[in-house]
Amino acid sequence: MIDGIVAWLGQQMQTGLFASGAALGLAGAAAATVHRLLPWALQLIRAATTTSVIVDSRSDVFEPLLLWLHHHPYSTRCRRLTATLRSAGDHGDGDGKKELVFTPAPGSHLLRYRGCPIWLERRRLQKGDGESLLRGSTPSETLHLTALGRDRGLLRRLIEEAVARYGQPDPETTAIYGLGEYLEWERLARIRRRPLESVILPEGVVEGLLADASRFLAGATWYVERGIPWRRGYLLYGPPGTGKTSLVKALAGALDLDVAVINLASPKLDDAVLCRLFAEAPAHSVLLMEDVDSAFCQREHDDANGRVTFSGLLNAIDGVMSQEGHLLFMTTNHLDRLDPALIRPGRVDVRVETGAVNREMAKRMFLAFFPGEVALVDIFADALGANQVTMAYLQGHLLRHRDSAPDAARTALSLK
Image (cartoon, rainbow, N blue to C red):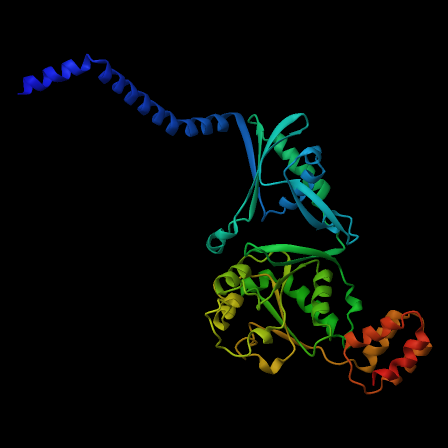
């Protein structure tokens, strides 16, 4: 029987049909092998003949590189573009105006730099990948730059040129960070630094806060030697319009720090995101949580909506992942609504009340608007009398009469 099977196979081998089938099988196997090996071979060739640099959206180089691309001749003829509005102050002008910036859209682009071809690949993470961002802190966008040759000097010069031209922000501005679309820190704007002397509070309050914050920032070694977490918390409390947020911005400017704002009422925020925001807070920044009373009037609240829980907030402030070396400012309009656990020593080290305008504060505000009008200062203060007004309300009155110091002084009676 076996001899019969062998004889049959011999006959089939001699037929054209079998030969054609065998050839097709061999061709298919060869094609599959090439399909598997080709990407590996191309990657090997690319690694041996090119140099690449990847810059992601978390890098300080990312924004200058986008502005460099905006001014590159390629962007004037590119037909796939992304348009954004950016503050002119972001790259040194500091005039607060908005500039329309066009950059190559996500995808592949070929441009030239110093006569050499540069392959640009811009990749943007999809919104649906947000959950991975919570765990891995993945950047929202990346720029891949590839140049021919194994010398990385060309790409280095390109990036150094971009940083030199567009990476030096106006030193008189403060960057404001917030929660971005991809659940990570995003720079939202740059604002002009507010002079510390423009924030009018009772005598010595502003100066005391500045001295305390400066001492903390310079005392890292002191904290480490004593095994104390290098953290400092401040609570500013008082009615709306008494200068709490203005004080934080002015202090940040005086300390050469940026401001990272955490909005606890954001529907995108939950315990995991909040914890990661604290852990990855922008370097050289002040953390600001405004109106904490509106988010936490009590310890328990519905977790079904995915918002931050009270225990999640406490863990973010001083848990194992909390970052050290930052100033944390919390503001509230209602001190009595805050849980004692939130404002205990170690989480809140300094409390400052911002209340109604007193006589001395009113006189300083008047002279800030009308320098040299000393004769009218007492008239203005007397007109206010014991009237309980906020600094915001007083400022509005002085703005309405900015062209006439006598009118501003005498009509202060109308504030009663």
